[in-house]
Image (cartoon, rainbow, N blue to C red; front, side, top):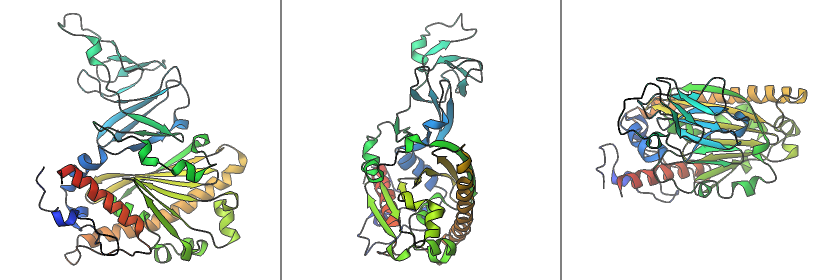
Amino acid sequence: MKALPPFISRSDLRQNPIERAETVPSAWYTEPGMKVIERVAIFEREWQLAGHISEIPEPGDSLCKTIAGNPVLIIRDPAGEVRAFFNVCKHRGGPVEVKKGTTTVLQCMYHGWTYLTDGSLRGVPQWDRVDLFDKKDFGLTPVPMEIWQGLIFVNVGDSPEPFMSVVDGISERIAPVRLDSLKFHSKETYHIGCNWKVYADNYLEGYHIPIVHPELAKLLDYRNYTTEAAGHYSLQYSPFQSSDSDNLYGAEDGEAYYYFIYPNIMLNILPGRLQTNVILPVDENRCVVEFYYYYTDPESPGAKKLIADDKAYSEMIQQEDIEICETVQRGLHSKAYNKGRFSVERELGVYHFQSCIKNSLRRHFGL
C-alpha cells in the first residue's frame, strides 16, 4: 500500500450514493502533485484514443502521438495491418519515423538506426566492433492497440484491461451507424486555462446549458435531456425542439449520441459524422483539447455547407465552454470552496466520472 499525499484523504476516496455524495475536493484540481499521480494511476492504465484508420489509409502512413507522456508511433504496414510501437529507438532514445522514399522502413532521426514495420531492428550504421550485440534484443517495443469502429486505441500500461470491456454495448446502441466508414476531415486544438477534470466535468452535464449555451438551449428539449452511465462510459442525449434543429443536426435521419469514455475521450456521434474530443492534461491549471472531425464524404460538394455549419456551431459552443471552465478553475483556487454536491437529476455523468477517478486512485494506492 502506498502512502497518501496530504491533499488526498481516505474519506475523500470513499464513494457514497449520488444522493449523499460530495464532489471531489478542490485540491484535486489545483495541487501540482496530482499530475504525476494521475499520469500513473489513470493515463498509463486506461485505453487512449489515438486516431482513426482514415488518417493512415496507405502502407507507410503513420501517426505520432504522445500517450501519458510516452511517444507512440502508429503505422500501417505493407500488408495493410495497423501496428503501434513506443516511438523510442533502442540506441539512445531517439524518435523514429518512416524513412523517406520507403513504406517499409522506419529510421531513427538521431543516428540512423533502421527498423522494419514489424519493429525488428534492420540496420545499425558503424557498428562493426561492438561485442555481444544481438539485433533481436533491440527491436522497437510494441504498444497494445485495438481498432474499434475504425477508431485506434492504445494502452501504454503493463497489463491493460481487455479493451472490449471499455466500449461494451456502444456498437449495439448506435447501430446501424458505423464509424469506420467515416473519413478524417480536420483537427482543431484548444489551449485552455483549466484543469483537465474541469473540462470533463463540464462536458458531462447539461445542467449548465440554459445559462452558458442559450442558443443550444433553444434547440434542445431540455426537460427530456437524459444521461446514462455504465462501466467505463456515460451517454448523454436529448430530443430536439424544432425542425430547424433537425436540419442543423441531421436528426431527421437518425439520433445524436454524446459518449464520454473514461478518462478523457468524447465521441459526439451524429448522422453522417463524428466529432472526437480528447482532453490532454498540461498541469494543474491548463489542458489541451483536440477536436477531430470525421464525415461520410467530406470532399463532396454537398458536405461543404454541413461541415462549415458544424465547425462554426462547435466553435461557438467551445468558446462558451472555455470561458466558464477558466472561470471555474479560478473559483476552485478560492479559499471559499472545497467540495460541492450533485444534482441527482442533472449530474449523473459528473458523478460517474468522479467515481471512476476515485476508483483509479484507490487502485493506485492499494486501498
